[in-house]
Length: 498
Image 1 (cartoon, rainbow, N blue to C red):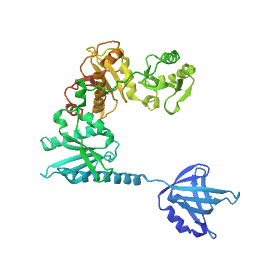
Image 2 (cartoon, rainbow, N blue to C red):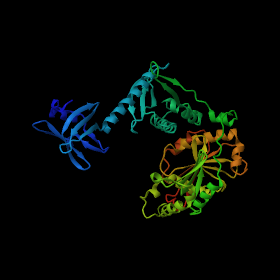
Image 3 (cartoon, rainbow, N blue to C red):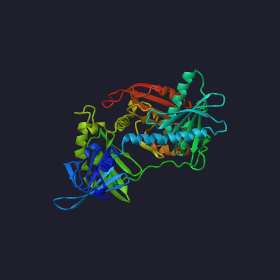
Image 4 (cartoon, one colour):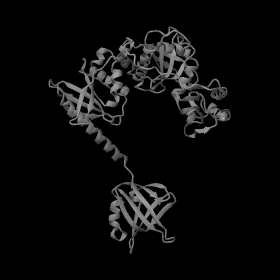
């Protein structure tokens, strides 16, 4: 619309539609401003607009103003140069508006599930829907059956939660219900999206049968027709695997071959500080680490060797023959800040990848954790299917051990470890000889692996023991509480076997 058709008050009305705007100039610069920072100055022949920029206040004499969806395009002509210029005002989305949209969408999903619960063979009457305090990602639907018994249903309305989080949440709800009602609660309903059905089903199969009966799983479908939930039959997958009835799974194999050129590059980097530098192997190459923090990555891409040096965003590609030169420089910085007594603990080289730091210290002397674990070989970041196990070890009695390392409280750590254990057990059943080869021909026991969960003191959640008690007793778990100053030296304060 032309300027003479647009009054000052009408343009101000356009501005007040949104509280904040992004000002996009023709030179590509962006500037965020509140609506009241954009001034409209009325004059005899029209009006001018003052907008804030990084260089200060800029005055525009509009030649034309167009509204494109919610954005405002202002075309102006400079009085001095006569050059035509454009400025675009783009509404900045308010986080409160985004939050309201998310809450509305998630409540709509919860409402659809509530309708589906009322259409079950044994219909449930919905009394209330609560959204969790964890960003509203989980809906808790309080229902009532025809005998007036209260039933609970959990729904991942964000479709972002993992099976470990949902399983932990449901089990803790069962614990709270049994304490409050002082009796065995009725089964909790979990309504799952297709994305996590498989993972949740697998975790469900590792529970004690009596606990598993208290969790009913349903899959939610709303693509065609009325929304519906269908029951999921839980299979005892890992028990079948232990009974050697699973033969379709292909065990993960080791990665690409290391050439002499790559070996020399890795050896030269490790030699700079053998007490702190190690390397791990992946399916696509190798990563050299300083106390668990990768600073040199070597990959083979279409038969060509490529090398990257650096940490985080400062990583850059270098020729492999220059790895010694660049590694020496970065190791000097790492040795100054990535140690137990750095000049400052705020430096990123100290703060990055703390779990990998603890893991690397355990790999160097695993007997500090458990004298029954063999000293070598160990496998750090061992790949089992799509997952990486922190440490794969072998006990003197031939039993495999999954070691999961944490340095901060994590309520999901138990079921995360159980998921790794389940997949490893399936591989062991299919090809036990492969693990014997990995550990230098040592005999691997026919018993399922053990799980070691390692964390500093006070990092285990108070409900850890309860969650372990929900698992099938044949899954052996050991908990290791370490000293808080583990960066200096690892010491086990307490070991608990379940």
